[in-house]
Image 1 (cartoon, rainbow, N blue to C red):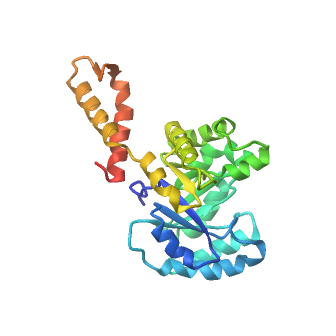
Image 2 (spheres, rainbow, N blue to C red):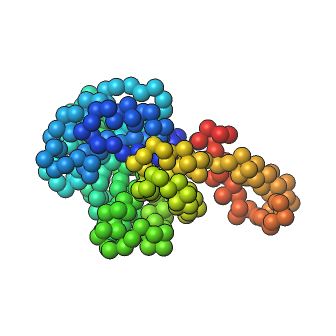
Image 3 (tube, rainbow, N blue to C red):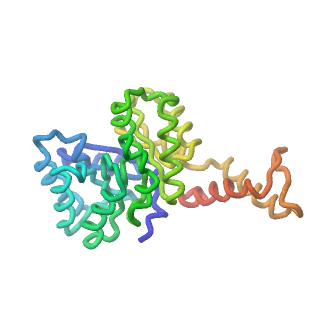
Length: 284
């Protein structure tokens, strides 16, 4: 199984109760769209959500996109029903978002049930509380199907009593990036909730991209182009990386200057990462 080449700059969420959201997801332009049977589905309509949204995954889409469904917590009755319903599908989603994960065992359990029937299905794991953050490193490596570690900071902030400011969320974001990087998977940041504040979206997305996140969630398609632009290397960045690689290769000592700045072999990691990401994004 190789999920590495999939783009995961963005994930957009829609309620699982409205079939029209399938078309909205396809048209949104997001790299991933998710029909949500958890937070966007009221408690008394969970069974209805399964019946409405799961058959939709038999449909083809006209562009490269990862089609996801968010289940309820695997520690809940509804979550167990969700997992068993997905297991029985002939045409499964491309992936499952697992919410409120607190341990690697939960992820392994979901994988053990689904992987024998749907081996290509990826798992996007949501960290939304203190226990999950404490176990993030083990969770990120819990199963080969795990493609993305996803910070759900709305739930997390509600638990600890913080706001959504960059300073308040810096510690938990750093932990997510470190755990995802160690596991070699993507790191997804939570959504910027105000679709009218594009300047705020850009500032926050640039900040988390600089921290090492590889994508950001959304609830509104208007945000997707800005998110994609920030998580895609620019022509200037690609050119700088190429020139840095060439300059160090030509150096007799492994140290030189590029654009007047001292660089050495340690800088190659960043340059190679930029070029690999540009190739994955389709801009190189």
